[in-house]
Image 1 (tube, rainbow, N blue to C red):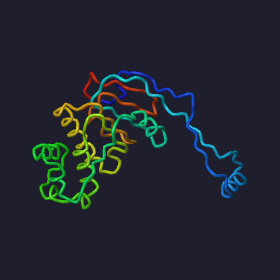
Image 2: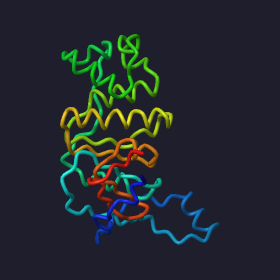
Image 3: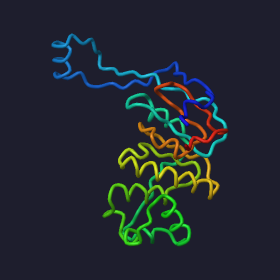
Image 4: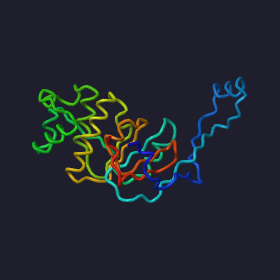
Length: 211
């Protein structure tokens, strides 16, 4: 099922006050203004989305094209921690003391290779390091920007499916995932989807997106 078939919880609206960044008006900018007839005073203003009060959720996805305001909207979740585990030089299986927990989490998100468990984080492949980080940093009130953006799409889908089951099993909540990709969304089956292209918030709590 496509998340756009879910009921619309609310429309996204923009704030009245812009975020403005200023750059130095150097000679290169002057050349651009001259040759391209570009009227520019050095200021760049954008009106960010305003996040309404949301219902309770376990997982929330922010999706949309590059430059559509996703990362700016992500800043509205200011009381959340960034999902980035601090790895040391020990094997990834040795990063926490709870052996049952770490092996359960690795297996849940598809990091099932025992030889990989015995490697340090710095030598892992991109896909392996992504899954290891998610497995160890996952907690309630955690957010992930560019979720699955660096990995193979089949890996993204399988990881999302395993992540959803892991969140249910450990009764976690308030996890926010942000990405320009949306192919993994049915596999994750999130409660809320915010689409910055459509400028809508979809409430998927009462449906199953998995097909």
